[in-house]
Length: 103
Image 1 (cartoon, rainbow, N blue to C red):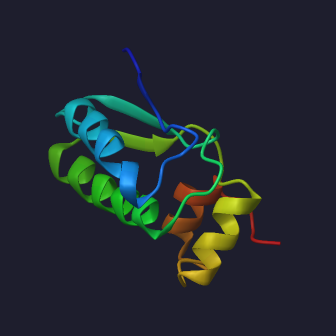
Image 2: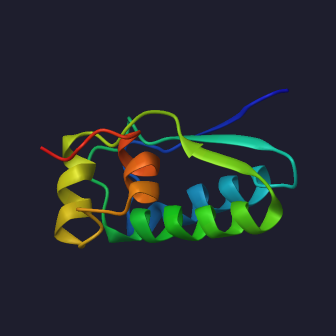
Image 3: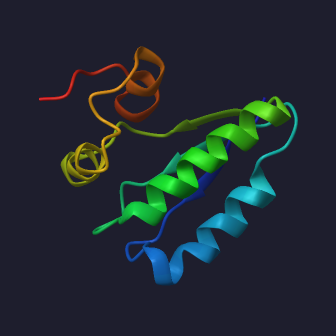
């Protein structure tokens, strides 16, 4: 089984989100395994969270194994908290934080 890695650019945010959206659209397919790497994203904004949430739903509907390649870093955690995604359900905590509790 191969894993498709989708990498977010350092400047991923609303003006540049289209490129990441296109990459995810191309990667998500039935029975695919896709990992999204957000570690390079220096200043993600709400558009990143919205896109990732949309990708989660699309992947689930397609039968695609979709996850982040690493838990959300401090910058993304702060954004998730400001956007009221954290604290989260057990499923969301597993997805965004790989099961870690928010500190």
